[in-house]
Length: 318
Image (cartoon, rainbow, N blue to C red):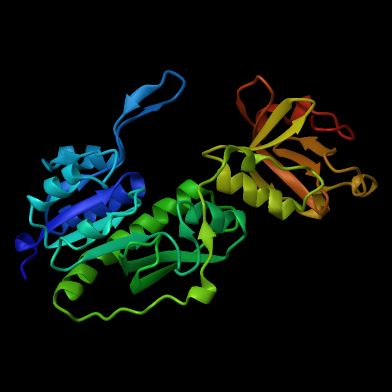
């Protein structure tokens, strides 16, 4: 089938989805409708902001539909009018009901940001970093009514850099997905691909990130704290509390022990053991954390190079 003859409905919301939508547009597919979550207030001024998929669709003269739910007659009737041959989803944020899954001739393909059956759910990228994974990827699957439980079509692996944050990894996963998606759809429609059932014994769940998951304590391992920093820097941020004062750590590295003076290596966790130039280093339960960017209680975001001199070696960071 010619790509221009294939009527595709696309569903997705964030930048990850926008990158995949662009791949379909650039690939010459006939995207007849784009669904995304409703516009949401963003920033301190709560400015109502369109999600990336909506912006991409409008720029390419594709109709946008932003329903609060797909589980009603209105949504089913709306989508049915387009007589889609295929539905493609990427980080849409809603489970599709059976009536919609049954609409397209070639079913529904989802681009999921993990190597299924590991990390099913809403936060696979954040939790891959949070738990120190070395490799993740994108799984293309034929959707069913479950949460990322459908049969797998193909996968692409992506290595995780030890200092990489969620936003960067999400972008690279999106690029890997977008590079493979157009040709995968061609092969799928032509009947050249088979599916593989997921091994339920290997399945793990990824519930949405909760604000309180940003909290850590200095008696934890430095690598674990670093993983929390880079996983949650966009939201809600990694933070430590002391007497209701919140110190946010926005960027970090696991510090080389050789940078720490011998007389301070056995300091109490939370103690500043070096504060010079770009080196703001704190003792952890195991190892040392090099703080690269932070936000003190009531203050603004600061690079360590601009504020390390304000901290006292041998004293608690907060």
